[in-house]
Amino acid sequence: MSSATSDSLTPAVVGRDFLASIVVFLVALPLCMGVAIASGAPPALGLITGIVGGLVVGTIAGSPLQVSGPAAGMAVLVFQLVQEHGLIMLGVVGLIAGALQLLAGVFKLGQWFRAISPSVIHGMLAGIGVLIFVSQLHVMLDDAPRSNGLENIAAIPEAVMKIFPMDGSVHHLAAMAGIVTIVSIVLWNQFRPKGLALIPGPLLGVIIGTIFAIAFALPITLVELPATLASGLNIPTGDALAGFTNPDILTLGLVFAFVASAETLLCATAVDKMHIGTRTDYDKELRAQGVGNMICGGLGALPMTGVIVRSAANVEAGATTRISAIMHGGWLLLAVVAFPFVLNEIPTSVLAAILVYTGYKLVNVAQIKKIAEFGRQELVIYFATLIGVVAIDLLTGVILGFVLATLKLVYTFSHLEIRRESDTTLNRVDLWMKGSATFFSIPQLSKALESSPFGSEVHVHVENLDYIDHACLEMLSSWEKLHQSTGGTLVVEWHELVERYNRRAEESNKSEIPGLMTRPAA
Image 1 (cartoon, rainbow, N blue to C red):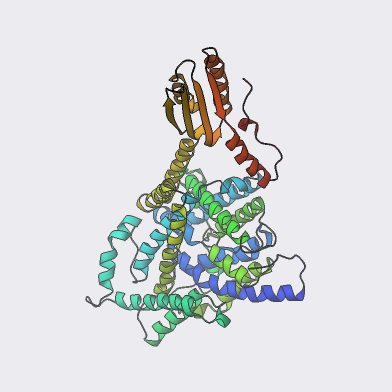
Image 2 (cartoon, rainbow, N blue to C red; image 1 turned 180 degrees about the vertical axis):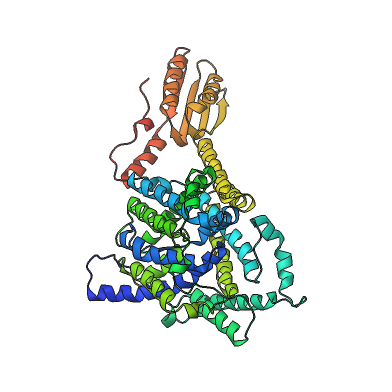
C-alpha cells in the first residue's frame, strides 16, 4: 500500500515512480492490444489510447495514481458500434462522449456518477466479463466472434470441438497457444517468488505464449501493427462527422460517457482505498477523462476509462505521484515507434487468452457472496443486471438494474409491518411497528389504531422502526387526541428508539437527536 502521494519531486520519489512506470507499462502493453482486438478494432488504436491516457490524462487527472487507457469494460460497446456503424464512427462517438464527460466535470456532476447501486455496477461488470469471455474464446481459436452474447454462448460447444484436430484446420494450434498463455498466468499468479512479484502475469503469459508459437512455428494469426503510428490513425471523415445529427450515434455517445464515467470513478474510489495520500477530485477526473476521450475521438482511437488492473499495479509498485502514469504512456509510445517488429510477432490468440482470463476475473464470485450478505433483493438486482447485459445489451441491462434498485428503495421507504396484540383483561392493545412509517403507511397505521376499543390503553412500539416521517407523527398526535376523548390513552415507546439515535449521533459527533425522533406534543 502506498504511504503517500507527494508533490515534492525528490530523487527518491522520481526513482520510485520511474520503476513503477515500467511495471505499469508491462501490464498495459498486452492489455491495450488485447482490448482493441476484443473491440473489433486494430491493436494500434488501443495503443494510441494507452499513450493518450498516460501522457495527457495522467498529467491533468484528478486521481494522481489512477492509470487510464482502453478498458475491457468498454470493449462490448465498441464492438457493437463497429459492427453496426463501422470503425470510422468510433471517433465521432468518442468526441461526443468526451464532450459530455468534460461538461459533467465542469458542472461538478462527478459525485452523481457515483450514486449508483453497487449491485448494478458489479452486475454490469460481471455481464461485461461474460460477454468478453464468450467472445474472446472464439478469437483464441483463431475464429471470428458472433454478433451478440447469446450467439457466442450457443457456439461454445462448436468452439470446443475445434480444439480437436479433426478437419485439418489450425484452430487447435491457436487454442494450444492460448491455453499455454492462460496456464502461465494462473501458475505465475499462484506461485511467483516474492522477489519477482512486480512482474505482471499478463506480460509473462504473452511472452511464454509467443515463444511457444515461435518455437513450434505455429501457422496462426499474428498481431498486425502499421509501419508508423500515424498510418494507423482512424481520423473521422467529413461524412462520419455528420453522424453528430444521427440520434443513434448521439445515444451511443451518451451511453459511452455514462459507462466510462461510472467505471472510472468506481476505479478511482478503489484506488483511494489502496493508499493514504491525496484523495480523488472526481470533477477534475471527469474533466481529464473528457479531454482524453475527445483527443482519442479526434484520432479515431478506442475510448478510455480509469482501469483498475493498471492502477493497482501502479500503487503496488510504489508510485507516489502522477509521474508514473505519465511515463508509462511514454514507454508505450517508444515501444510502438521503435519496436513494432517485436509486437508483430505476438499471436492474436495469445492476446485473446488474456481477455478470456480477464473476463473470468470480472465475474467475481467473492463479490457475489459479499452482495448476498445484504439480502436477496440485492442479489436479484445483481443477476438481473448481469442477465440483461448478456441477453439484451449493456444499456438495457444497466437500466433494468437501476429500475430494480429504485423500486427496492421505494419499497424500503414505504414498507411497514404492524403486529397487533390485545389483552381484553387489561383493556390493552400493543402495536409493534417495523420498517419505515411514511405517508404511504398512514392508511395501514390508521386502520390498526382505529381497531382499538374505546377507552383502551394503546402502546405503540417503535424501536424497530428504520424511519418515521412528519406525516405519521402528525397522525399519531391527532389520533391520540381523539382516543383520549373516549377515555383511552396512547403510549408511544420512544425511549429505545431515542437511545439508538443518540448512540448514532455520538458516533457521528452530532449533538442533537433528529427532530423526527422526539415525540410531538399532544
